[in-house]
Length: 250
Ligand code: SF4
Ligand code: SF4
Image (tube, rainbow, N blue to C red; front, side, top):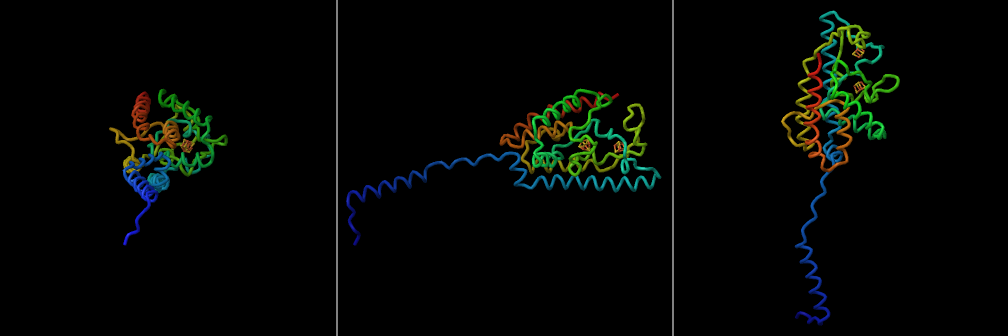
């Protein structure tokens, strides 16, 4: 036979039931939106973007070595001791290519106001001058003319090889003979995959622009949970500026 509850016990039980019912009807807190850096980490995108670019560079180098043998030409870049003129010119990059660079800069504590200011100044100049006039050492080049992100360098840096003498690269009036590898379309394909994996907003064109601008935007986006909207607003503007600058080439 059920024990009869005292009025105090009954009140306690009713209050408990009420609390349970309230807990059931309270809306669940919306999950916090992930930052760009969290999406990158959760989806292992530093590894996959780095692999795509490294493979492209490796294949291009192999192709260039073979092409040089066939044409009996020297690839000057393989033993270049000249001033690194190729690190003071206009360089473009897809957005996925700068993800491993930014990951490294952050891990090495190099995301400083000074670096951001230098990237912004270089990007402004790269986007407004003709490539014929642009000569500014890359913000990622050190005083000894070594690339400080060599293992993460973008495809344009890793797949540009010349057969003319290295000294000619720093002479604006000299002609430079470049090998034109057939692989660069792969960067565009890797970019499409990345944009989907990183949950970026699809745009009419790819996420691409001047290298310093892409690095800067990636640094700025890293800790933002509204990164997709932020990048979708910024990229079309800077991509257009970069295209307009290249069109000024005489
Ligand atoms: S592009 Fe010219 S300056 Fe750059 S590594 Fe090759 S030879 Fe040297
Ligand atoms: S990223 Fe490295 S290789 Fe490319 S331009 Fe800058 S310093 Fe040179």
